[in-house]
Figure (cartoon, rainbow, N blue to C red):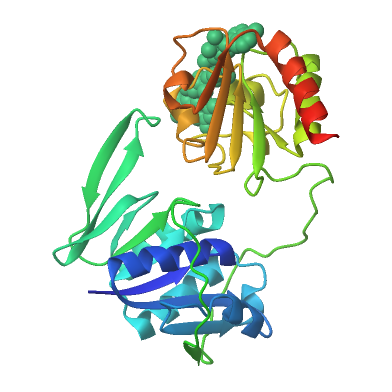
Length: 316
Ligand SMILES: Cc1cc2nc3c(=O)[nH]c(=O)nc-3n(C[C@H](O)[C@H](O)[C@H](O)COP(=O)(O)OP(=O)(O)OC[C@H]3O[C@@H](n4cnc5c(N)ncnc54)[C@H](O)[C@@H]3O)c2cc1C
């Protein structure tokens, strides 16, 4: 039985942690951090399996900067006395995990898969060496653990946990402050929540050829993703569209991999998709081991035909 405290800067990801907590057993609390009235955030997280919600509201937590956010999680931990602290593997979660573990002098496991209780500690698997190997790790006692996004379904049954306001929170003096926020330019749709993704790989010869995939995406109401060579190496697609180990993990209803070989670092980010379609000229490409439907063929011939067929079928 564990005493679990969870935090995520995304409510949806936090609901995924609740499901993991239910699997692990024990009591489950959530920390909600921010400024002003936090009741609407708490309400969203008031689901079956959550026994308490600790609200820490303070001006310093407005932008969830790492310093004050760590202070706040430390303050909640001192009250809740968890033996397991779960954070989502968001950028913020990863930023906080190491800091919090150091503060509390406990172990830290990042991107844990198959997390389980082991004696008085916890055990998990982690992908290492660029996703080519799996390390089994364990903590001897309490631990801070980050959990990959979308690894669990979101808990959803409403309930009425205890709401505890942490009124006496005082952050340590800070020397970093947020001086502004900028919206991303419109059109850069996040691939994280896309239901359909069509992804481009090194099979595309020129940047201009990607318009072919954009046409397909338009017909399917899909978002265009890409493998790493097209983002980091060639700069043809913005990095926030990269799918994989060092990009985003996605779990759409449909993932179409076009001219992507299926190296482990890419597969790690999309293999949980509900239906995977692969288009590749090489019938031995590893992607064909992972897909539900495989088309062995030249993308330059297949993609326009697919677009035409979907257009006719969907009447778009
Ligand atoms: C630490 C680390 C992290 C990484 N993180 C990521 C990551 O997050 N995401 C990621 O994607 N990669 C990542 N990589 C890179 C990864 O190892 C691969 O290099 C990359 O995924 C390959 O991309 P690709 O499949 O597009 O290219 P390739 O492996 O070059 O494959 C291109 C494919 O296109 C096919 N093809 C060629 N012409 C055509 C055509 N006309 N029609 C149809 N098919 C065609 C070929 O048969 C081939 O299978 C990472 C690597 C490391 C070491």
